[in-house]
Length: 259
Image (cartoon, rainbow, N blue to C red):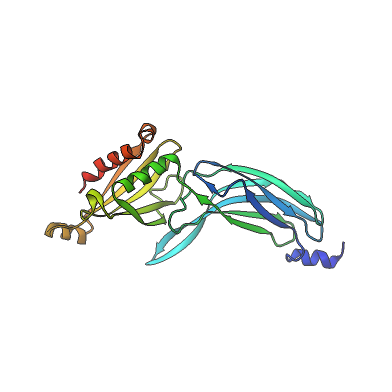
Protein backbone atom coordinates (compact mmCIF):
# COMPACT_ATOMS: atom_id res chain seq x y z
CA UNK A 1 0.00 0.00 0.00
CA UNK A 2 1.91 3.03 -1.25
CA UNK A 3 2.47 6.27 0.58
CA UNK A 4 1.29 8.08 -2.57
CA UNK A 5 -2.10 6.31 -2.49
CA UNK A 6 -2.54 7.12 1.18
CA UNK A 7 -1.70 10.77 0.56
CA UNK A 8 -4.15 10.99 -2.34
CA UNK A 9 -6.90 9.33 -0.27
CA UNK A 10 -6.30 11.83 2.54
CA UNK A 11 -7.41 14.63 0.22
CA UNK A 12 -10.37 12.66 -1.14
CA UNK A 13 -8.83 11.14 -4.28
CA UNK A 14 -9.28 7.37 -4.31
CA UNK A 15 -11.01 7.51 -0.91
CA UNK A 16 -14.11 5.62 0.22
CA UNK A 17 -17.50 6.88 -1.01
CA UNK A 18 -20.92 6.70 0.63
CA UNK A 19 -24.46 6.66 -0.73
CA UNK A 20 -27.66 6.76 1.32
CA UNK A 21 -30.78 4.93 0.13
CA UNK A 22 -34.18 4.98 1.82
CA UNK A 23 -37.10 2.58 1.40
CA UNK A 24 -39.21 5.34 -0.16
CA UNK A 25 -38.96 9.01 -1.05
CA UNK A 26 -41.88 10.46 0.94
CA UNK A 27 -42.55 10.37 4.69
CA UNK A 28 -44.98 11.97 7.12
CA UNK A 29 -43.84 13.60 10.39
CA UNK A 30 -43.68 10.95 13.10
CA UNK A 31 -43.11 8.14 10.58
CA UNK A 32 -40.11 5.80 10.74
CA UNK A 33 -37.45 6.26 8.07
CA UNK A 34 -35.58 3.08 7.17
CA UNK A 35 -32.71 2.72 4.75
CA UNK A 36 -29.11 1.74 4.17
CA UNK A 37 -25.80 3.51 3.77
CA UNK A 38 -23.63 1.96 1.07
CA UNK A 39 -19.89 2.28 1.50
CA UNK A 40 -17.61 1.72 -1.44
CA UNK A 41 -13.96 1.28 -0.50
CA UNK A 42 -11.35 3.33 -2.27
CA UNK A 43 -7.80 2.51 -3.31
CA UNK A 44 -6.48 2.13 0.25
CA UNK A 45 -7.62 0.71 3.57
CA UNK A 46 -9.37 3.39 5.64
CA UNK A 47 -10.60 3.55 9.22
CA UNK A 48 -14.11 5.04 9.55
CA UNK A 49 -14.69 6.33 13.08
CA UNK A 50 -18.45 6.50 12.56
CA UNK A 51 -21.25 7.36 10.13
CA UNK A 52 -24.13 9.67 11.02
CA UNK A 53 -27.37 10.32 9.12
CA UNK A 54 -29.02 13.66 9.99
CA UNK A 55 -32.36 15.14 8.99
CA UNK A 56 -31.75 18.74 7.95
CA UNK A 57 -33.82 21.78 7.05
CA UNK A 58 -33.46 25.52 7.35
CA UNK A 59 -35.50 28.41 8.71
CA UNK A 60 -35.56 32.11 7.88
CA UNK A 61 -34.46 34.61 10.51
CA UNK A 62 -34.75 38.32 9.84
CA UNK A 63 -31.87 40.43 11.17
CA UNK A 64 -31.79 44.18 10.48
CA UNK A 65 -34.33 43.80 7.65
CA UNK A 66 -32.20 41.06 6.06
CA UNK A 67 -33.52 37.52 5.79
CA UNK A 68 -30.90 34.91 6.68
CA UNK A 69 -31.11 31.13 6.21
CA UNK A 70 -30.06 28.99 9.17
CA UNK A 71 -29.56 25.25 8.76
CA UNK A 72 -30.85 23.13 11.61
CA UNK A 73 -30.46 19.43 12.50
CA UNK A 74 -33.85 17.92 13.30
CA UNK A 75 -32.60 14.44 14.20
CA UNK A 76 -29.41 12.41 13.96
CA UNK A 77 -28.81 8.65 13.91
CA UNK A 78 -25.46 6.87 14.32
CA UNK A 79 -25.29 4.21 11.61
CA UNK A 80 -22.15 2.36 12.69
CA UNK A 81 -19.39 2.39 15.30
CA UNK A 82 -15.76 2.48 14.08
CA UNK A 83 -15.20 0.15 11.13
CA UNK A 84 -12.34 -0.58 8.74
CA UNK A 85 -13.02 -0.49 4.98
CA UNK A 86 -10.67 -2.46 2.78
CA UNK A 87 -9.72 -1.35 -0.76
CA UNK A 88 -12.70 -1.77 -3.16
CA UNK A 89 -14.79 -3.36 -0.39
CA UNK A 90 -18.56 -2.77 -0.45
CA UNK A 91 -20.65 -2.62 2.72
CA UNK A 92 -24.34 -1.94 3.32
CA UNK A 93 -25.25 -0.64 6.76
CA UNK A 94 -28.94 -0.38 7.77
CA UNK A 95 -30.39 2.50 9.79
CA UNK A 96 -33.76 3.65 11.06
CA UNK A 97 -35.12 6.56 13.06
CA UNK A 98 -38.35 8.54 13.55
CA UNK A 99 -38.91 11.65 11.46
CA UNK A 100 -39.55 14.36 14.10
CA UNK A 101 -43.14 15.66 14.45
CA UNK A 102 -41.92 19.25 13.85
CA UNK A 103 -40.42 18.47 10.43
CA UNK A 104 -41.64 21.04 7.87
CA UNK A 105 -43.93 19.80 5.13
CA UNK A 106 -42.76 19.88 1.52
CA UNK A 107 -45.11 22.75 0.73
CA UNK A 108 -43.54 26.01 -0.35
CA UNK A 109 -39.81 26.57 -0.50
CA UNK A 110 -38.51 24.78 2.60
CA UNK A 111 -36.37 21.73 1.73
CA UNK A 112 -35.78 18.73 3.97
CA UNK A 113 -32.83 16.47 3.30
CA UNK A 114 -30.80 13.62 4.75
CA UNK A 115 -27.16 14.52 5.31
CA UNK A 116 -24.88 11.51 5.68
CA UNK A 117 -21.30 12.01 6.85
CA UNK A 118 -18.53 9.46 7.45
CA UNK A 119 -15.76 10.41 9.87
CA UNK A 120 -12.57 9.02 8.33
CA UNK A 121 -9.31 9.31 10.21
CA UNK A 122 -6.76 11.67 8.56
CA UNK A 123 -8.89 12.21 5.45
CA UNK A 124 -11.55 14.39 3.89
CA UNK A 125 -14.88 13.13 5.23
CA UNK A 126 -17.18 11.86 2.44
CA UNK A 127 -20.75 13.14 2.57
CA UNK A 128 -24.05 12.50 0.81
CA UNK A 129 -27.19 14.71 0.64
CA UNK A 130 -30.57 13.31 -0.37
CA UNK A 131 -33.77 15.35 -0.40
CA UNK A 132 -36.94 13.73 0.89
CA UNK A 133 -40.56 14.71 0.49
CA UNK A 134 -42.44 15.36 3.74
CA UNK A 135 -46.18 14.79 3.37
CA UNK A 136 -48.93 15.72 5.87
CA UNK A 137 -50.08 13.30 8.53
CA UNK A 138 -53.72 12.23 8.30
CA UNK A 139 -54.71 14.86 10.89
CA UNK A 140 -52.79 17.62 9.13
CA UNK A 141 -54.30 16.61 5.81
CA UNK A 142 -57.80 16.98 7.25
CA UNK A 143 -56.96 20.57 8.24
CA UNK A 144 -55.50 21.42 4.83
CA UNK A 145 -58.55 19.95 3.07
CA UNK A 146 -60.85 21.86 5.43
CA UNK A 147 -59.28 25.20 4.46
CA UNK A 148 -59.75 24.39 0.79
CA UNK A 149 -63.41 23.56 1.43
CA UNK A 150 -63.82 27.03 2.97
CA UNK A 151 -62.57 28.64 -0.22
CA UNK A 152 -58.94 29.27 0.77
CA UNK A 153 -55.76 28.50 -1.14
CA UNK A 154 -52.14 28.59 0.02
CA UNK A 155 -50.31 31.70 -1.13
CA UNK A 156 -47.04 30.97 0.64
CA UNK A 157 -45.48 28.55 3.11
CA UNK A 158 -42.29 29.49 4.96
CA UNK A 159 -40.32 28.11 7.87
CA UNK A 160 -39.60 31.06 10.13
CA UNK A 161 -37.62 31.74 13.30
CA UNK A 162 -40.12 31.79 16.18
CA UNK A 163 -38.54 30.45 19.39
CA UNK A 164 -41.57 31.37 21.51
CA UNK A 165 -43.95 29.40 19.32
CA UNK A 166 -41.86 26.37 18.42
CA UNK A 167 -42.54 23.39 20.65
CA UNK A 168 -39.04 21.88 20.77
CA UNK A 169 -37.45 23.88 17.97
CA UNK A 170 -36.66 27.57 17.29
CA UNK A 171 -38.92 27.73 14.22
CA UNK A 172 -42.43 27.13 12.95
CA UNK A 173 -43.76 26.53 9.46
CA UNK A 174 -46.29 29.19 8.56
CA UNK A 175 -48.95 28.72 5.87
CA UNK A 176 -50.59 31.83 4.41
CA UNK A 177 -54.11 31.10 3.20
CA UNK A 178 -56.03 33.64 1.10
CA UNK A 179 -59.76 33.45 0.31
CA UNK A 180 -60.46 33.17 -3.40
CA UNK A 181 -64.10 32.16 -3.03
CA UNK A 182 -66.59 31.03 -0.43
CA UNK A 183 -67.85 32.98 2.57
CA UNK A 184 -64.62 34.85 3.33
CA UNK A 185 -63.81 36.28 -0.09
CA UNK A 186 -63.77 40.06 0.32
CA UNK A 187 -64.03 39.78 4.12
CA UNK A 188 -60.54 38.56 5.03
CA UNK A 189 -57.09 39.41 3.73
CA UNK A 190 -55.60 36.12 4.86
CA UNK A 191 -55.45 33.46 7.57
CA UNK A 192 -52.03 32.29 8.69
CA UNK A 193 -51.82 28.73 9.99
CA UNK A 194 -49.16 27.17 12.19
CA UNK A 195 -49.24 23.55 13.34
CA UNK A 196 -48.07 24.05 16.94
CA UNK A 197 -48.04 20.49 18.21
CA UNK A 198 -48.40 17.76 15.67
CA UNK A 199 -49.34 14.30 16.84
CA UNK A 200 -50.32 11.31 14.74
CA UNK A 201 -54.00 11.50 15.64
CA UNK A 202 -54.54 15.18 16.52
CA UNK A 203 -53.05 18.63 15.98
CA UNK A 204 -52.98 21.96 17.79
CA UNK A 205 -53.30 24.98 15.53
CA UNK A 206 -52.46 28.65 15.84
CA UNK A 207 -54.50 30.85 13.51
CA UNK A 208 -53.73 34.49 12.76
CA UNK A 209 -56.86 36.00 11.22
CA UNK A 210 -56.28 39.18 9.23
CA UNK A 211 -59.52 41.08 8.63
CA UNK A 212 -59.98 43.15 5.48
CA UNK A 213 -60.55 46.86 6.10
CA UNK A 214 -64.12 47.74 5.07
CA UNK A 215 -64.71 51.10 6.75
CA UNK A 216 -62.83 54.06 8.23
CA UNK A 217 -62.23 52.34 11.57
CA UNK A 218 -61.18 49.18 9.76
CA UNK A 219 -58.65 51.09 7.69
CA UNK A 220 -57.32 52.76 10.83
CA UNK A 221 -57.01 49.39 12.58
CA UNK A 222 -55.24 47.95 9.55
CA UNK A 223 -52.77 50.84 9.50
CA UNK A 224 -52.05 50.35 13.22
CA UNK A 225 -51.75 46.57 12.88
CA UNK A 226 -54.82 46.14 15.06
CA UNK A 227 -56.74 44.12 12.48
CA UNK A 228 -55.26 40.74 13.37
CA UNK A 229 -56.61 38.19 15.84
CA UNK A 230 -54.83 35.12 17.16
CA UNK A 231 -56.60 31.96 18.24
CA UNK A 232 -55.54 28.44 19.22
CA UNK A 233 -57.62 25.40 18.41
CA UNK A 234 -57.10 21.66 18.93
CA UNK A 235 -58.37 19.29 16.25
CA UNK A 236 -58.89 16.09 18.20
CA UNK A 237 -58.75 12.50 17.07
CA UNK A 238 -62.56 12.27 16.95
CA UNK A 239 -62.69 15.49 14.89
CA UNK A 240 -60.22 14.00 12.42
CA UNK A 241 -62.24 10.78 12.28
CA UNK A 242 -65.33 12.79 11.25
CA UNK A 243 -63.59 13.99 8.09
CA UNK A 244 -62.64 17.27 6.37
CA UNK A 245 -66.21 18.63 6.18
CA UNK A 246 -66.54 18.36 9.96
CA UNK A 247 -63.13 20.01 10.49
CA UNK A 248 -64.12 22.76 8.03
CA UNK A 249 -67.20 23.49 10.13
CA UNK A 250 -65.03 23.76 13.24
CA UNK A 251 -62.66 26.19 11.53
CA UNK A 252 -65.56 28.13 10.04
CA UNK A 253 -67.05 28.57 13.51
CA UNK A 254 -63.76 29.95 14.84
CA UNK A 255 -62.88 32.19 11.89
CA UNK A 256 -66.39 33.66 11.61
CA UNK A 257 -66.11 35.06 15.15
CA UNK A 258 -63.30 37.37 14.04
CA UNK A 259 -64.72 38.64 10.74
